[in-house]
Length: 186
Image (cartoon, rainbow, N blue to C red; front, side, top):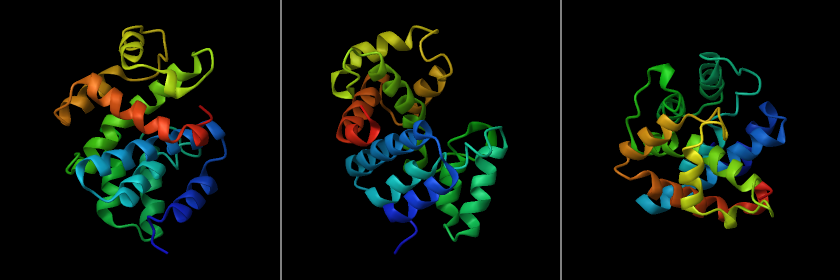
């Protein structure tokens, strides 16, 4: 079995992450990354693994720069290739690791947005991600008190780095999360 096989990645995620909310964040970013890989003609298994594991160390090492540096060390010990590790490191701007490939740019673009879109679903009467509309997400992004910890500037920067407008990246994330709604509890 490959290191990017979903079963292998899920075992690693679950070994380090006990809370369902953080696991669901990993599942959400995985779905957005798989969709991005398909959209760009790349390997969905590899990109999905990056998404699934990007925060696997966060619960045990929540403070910067421990996250994601401690996770990078664990990934290296387990034999993950350096490009995979650097892609994960690059999702946290404070690491100073540049986003050198499309996978890294997409990870940065969808990470914060996945959490934000999930928060938008949670305030829907039926809590269904399929009911969330792009226009509604854009409107909520302007409300600084809604999901206040989400870095709106990183959402804008991520979209710009991909040459997309914010509405396009929101539509991408909503469509991807809708395909994983059951696993996300949405």
